[in-house]
Structures are given as structure tokens and as C-alpha cells.
Image (cartoon, rainbow, N blue to C red; front, side, top):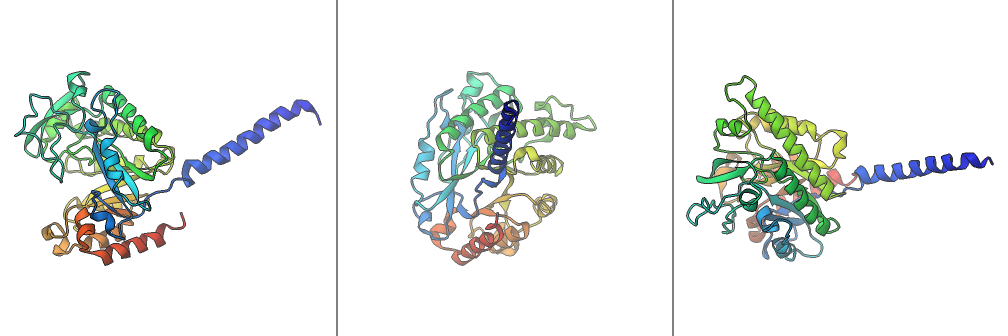
Length: 362
């Protein structure tokens, strides 16, 4: 054999093998969550055999109380409650970073469902020490300072925090990570109750411009995709979800995001989150219509507890699961109340069985 041809042949063979391995790891190796996970992990909820896992919730301010100093206590407290056969998903809430002057005892937003009242969702040092750009808004009637999602310092610090969390948990039973957003509750993609003019002014856009909302969409899409890429990089081989809501009472921006995340460069890892599933179509009905035609992964959280009957279509909690099935949802987060009180065990069991049949051949 001509030895001059050996090296090119070896290089070509190595390329073919590495490309095949890379292609497999790029898409097929991602184990995405399916079935029912509790939206809050509790000792009582994990006793329910229909619970596949749970959502771990933590704020950025808890994860990184000081720049570059990370505290995983809140994550560990929740993961320890899970049984060995249970998996988990993760939501790190970004969002408002109130300064000390604005975060007194009486004005702190009631963020958590279980009584905790953090002084901020994002760490206050973003504002106090790094001087990132913010804008003033209200959250549930409380004045807060919101760091701008598109601020390059915010994006860089998000990336560094996610890298630290990913290094700690990328090989765990963690199955999916929500993209942190600088929004009202730091995971959902909305600014409910915030005037349009406030958002446009924050982005340096004249509200009188004919295409003002499209310009904001350009800014928001760039920030959202950058944060999403940071999650993808920090958690290789993990599923990712980006939660969508209407903005400016329109589906234009979430629809752009949905199209964006279907592009090949996102490795078929980015799905869409819907944290307001209720069985109803009267709330964000146009966005629901879009999601019905969406062929990617869809993750949902139930909008309320089953005893809050007015929150559901026809006052019937079971319509949630019917809607989830119609949308092709692979995963849904009922409240821990349902698992603790066994309010709908049979419906939970049926949903788990249905999604197993639908997604078992992935």
C-alpha cells in the first residue's frame, strides 16, 4: 500500500466515526421527561405512585447570593425528597432584582406559593454592584426593578451561573431545564399588567413607531435565544423548555420564538412551555391554536389546584388533561395538592399511560 495515502484515509475514517457519534449524541441521546411531575416537591406528594418526578424551583438570587459564589442548598433540599425512581426538572427564576430601598417588608412581592417572600428573584448585586440597566415596573401591585434581559452583563452573568449549575447536575436524574427569563415571575414569558409603553421605553423604542412592537420582538428574540443557548451549553444532553405567553396581547413574539427553536441548530432539544393550561380556550386562545399545530416538544403546568374550580373549563379539572392530550403534551405539572390528596389519581395514571404509548419509540 502506498503509505502516502494512509494518513488521509485514517483522517477520513476518524471524521466519519466522530461525525456519526456526534450526530447520535446531538439528538437521539436526549432523554426527555414524560408524564406527570409535581409542580412543587413535598414529602406527601412523593408518596403518590402516579408522580414520575417533580419540578425543582429556585431563584437566581438563592443560587448565586454573591458574584461567583454558588449555593445549591435549595436545590438539594428539594431533590432529597424524591424517591430513587423519580426524576426532576429545574426552573431557575430570573426576573426582578429589587434594591434594598424598594424591598421593604410590606412591599415584597408574594412570589412563592408556600410562603417564602424573597427580596429579589435575580440577585440584587446585579443592580447594586454591577450597575446593570433596569426599568421600573409593578409585579402583583409591588414596585420592582427589572434588569433588562438584553443587557450584555445580564446575559454574561446568566451564562456563568448556568455553567456552575450545569457542572454540578448535568449527570444527575435531571431531565429538563427551563430557560430563565427576565420577566414578571422569572420563568413565564409575560409582563402581565405592565403597560406596553413601559416595555417599549425600556428597550429604547418610541411607542409611536408603526413597527414598535416588532422592534421590541427583535430585541426580545435576540435575548431569549442567547439565554437559551446558554442553557443548552451548560446542560449538554438535557432537554430544555422556553415558556411562552402573549406579549402586547399578540401572538407575534411567541410565534417567532416557536419557529426559532425548531431550527436545526437547537438540536431538537428545545421545547415550548405552557404554564397556564386550564382546559379553557378563552385565555390566549390564539396562542393555543398555534400550539395545536406545533410538532415539537410541549411541556405544561396546570394553572391552579383542582379545588379552584372556576379556573377550569366548565369548572371541571379533568378538562386540563383532555386539553393536554389534544395539544400532544408529553409532560404536565399538576400542583402538589393533587398528589398529596389523591384528588385525581386515575386521571394521572391514564395520562402517564397515554404519553408512554405516544413517546416510547423515540
